[in-house]
Amino acid sequence: MANHLAVRAELESLTTEAFRPELADIDQLPTLDIAKLMNTEDAGVPTAVAAQLPLIAAAIDAIAERMGRGGRLIYAGAGTAGRLGVLDASECPPTFNTAPTRVVGLIAGGREAMVTSIEGAEDSADLARTDLDALTLTPDDTVVGVSASGRTPYAVGAVEHARAADALTVGLSCNAASALAAAADHGIEIVVGPELVTGSTRLKAGTAQKLVLNMLSTITMIRLGKTYGNLMVDVRATNDKLRARSHRIVALATGATDDEIETALTASNGQVKNAILTILSGVDAPTATRLLTENEGHLRAALAAAMSR
Image 1 (cartoon, rainbow, N blue to C red):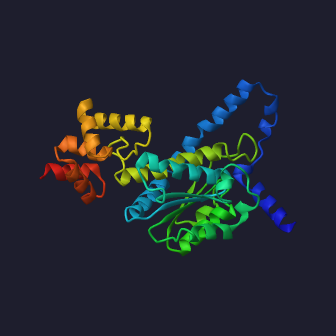
Image 2: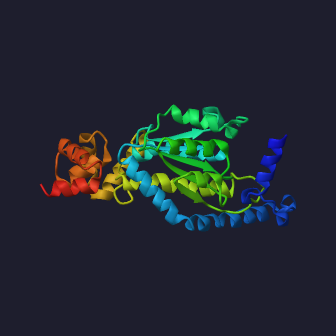
Image 3: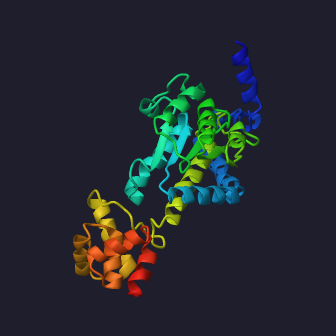
């Protein structure tokens, strides 16, 4: 009972849990008015993110440095925060052709927690340590704890355990002066204020977390050479839509004819980077593969090397 009262008192002190009396009658408003209120609330989220951009950029540079040495990006969270981490991780292989083990999403309670609430899982720092130990952390790994409140034991425990293992740590929360940010090497606090529905942090807080996770993964991949300009040159063509996208990306990068593109993609086993390199530099597919390997997958660097031959 004492612990319950302590948690209740802690929640009442959080901005994300604050009650807004001016919205106490929203259930009596017309649907359009409620939608307008929500839209107005959401419009402030990018501004809150913008206030933290220098901290976000510093975290990305640190993550990219370690991933460039072979490290992993690991998200750890509970509930909505955990689901957002799993979502971001799951989208990296098809978008950037990363191995599924390079960007990992951990959610308190495991796979079942993606679709249902696992009672008590978020309250266990020990569970976070167990989940991370299964991954055998190294100093080149990064663990990003994600929690709207900034106090979730699973997220805080993950960051504390990762830091003790000399991994890089990032704490992403939506409350100022959070325990999560304090525990991490890089604390990022996106203070979006109280929610339209009191305590429903899947709303503004969830949107803020999604925007930041988009930045962490996408810009890290840009730094690692996974794009050429703003083109997804490491896209994995696993279905008809992605095969068509691969063709279009090569066309945008090279201006080549459809026949030239199909010939290059076939010779390169569907690898977009390789096909672009063969078309723009005139090297054959095996040479393109070698040049990309020598330049750690950076297409611009491989092109420069090909042109200087």
